[in-house]
Amino acid sequence: MQEKRVNPNYILLSFIVSLSATLGSLFFSEIMQFVPCSMCWYQRIFMYPLVFIFLINLLYPDDKIFKYTFIIILVGLLFSIYHNLLMFGIISEDMVPCVQGVPCSTTYLDWFGFITIPLLSFVAYFSLFILQLLIYKNLKEKQ
Image (cartoon, rainbow, N blue to C red):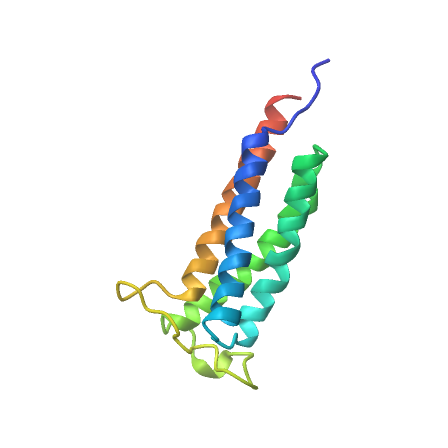
């Protein structure tokens, strides 16, 4: 029977993506002094632990990494999708959970007319989602 092993490149890429997203969010809030909205905080809550989970998995490989991370990434991705729908005006401002502090539709960043902080979050979560699907596929092929 062949031993199941997750491709370590997928774990390394997942670690790099989650670390970049975490450091990026800290840069925007702590260095650039952009106050995060409620939706940004929810996305951070689901991103920050992923850095440690992927780092630990790099140091001590565990083939159950998909089970540990997939639901966290999926929930963060759903928050990210919701936030982007709001930013692009598809969801009404009335349907937003940001009732205190900074409005969720605040645009601190607008690169090339469409790249916003919520879009960067979506790209990070979607990348992690795809990487986790590749990990799952990799494990299934080795069974």
